[in-house]
Amino acid sequence: MKKLLIVVMACYALTTRAQVHESKNFIYLYSDSVIYAKDIRLRPDFSGYLQLRADSRKVPTEQVKFFSNGDGFFANTRRLNFGSTTSFSERIIEGKINMFQQEDYYPYQYDHRYRRSRYMDRRPQAVDVKMYYNKGYADLKKANYHNLSADMADNPRAMDMLKNYRKSINTGKTMYIVAGAAIVSGLISFLVTGSSSREMSNGNGFSFSKGPNFTPAFILLGAGAGLATGGYFIQASGNRHLESAIDAYNR
Image 1 (cartoon, helix red, strand yellow):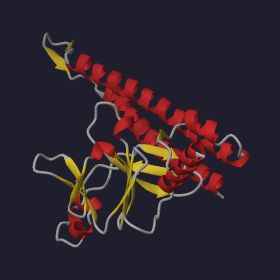
Image 2 (cartoon, rainbow, N blue to C red):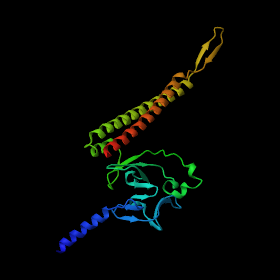
Image 3 (cartoon, rainbow, N blue to C red):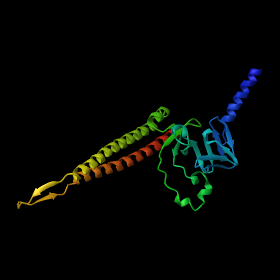
Image 4 (cartoon, rainbow, N blue to C red):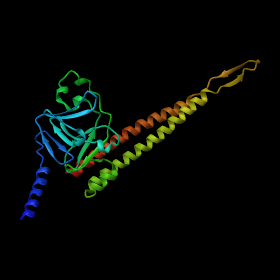
């Protein structure tokens, strides 16, 4: 009877920890405990490090797995960015697979008080496009073809879109490599051409120097810049294929 009671209590504890009321503001810890609060804010302290507060209580960010407030649902990505400081990614797709996008931290990103201030219009655009995903409240994984193909293998339509994502990413990487080679070659050509000059005679016993021809160098530099731009847009289209694959899987 005592053993049965222990089993029942353990099952109840697991069920209780697994139940999360997402309509409320909450902090989900790595221990699977949930903290509910009226006001949850993520802001930097005096040293510039992020601190999370649930009402008046300070919660160590290294213990936080997820948190949700009026501004969105966020996941801790510190364990996926080795050697980095605490960072959070916002959930941009919710479903059987949740997609998270990491952005640079700005105080007003997580706190609506800042959004109503005069600094709102000065918010820079996010340049960090690191993507992560998970299922339910499981640990986050990096959103790459290797991980997603294992978790989405049961949906052929989503896998087709995922293959388009891989193709775009690989094409973009190839273009970046070729662009880098072209730019380096252009710079070398520019330096070599600039350091050389040709002496020519006009037939009257006088000689003059002919200016260096930088045309090949400029062509290489222009080609490199064009390829780099093309690679950027192709990889951006790859991210759209990724979101389409997630949407298809979640239907």
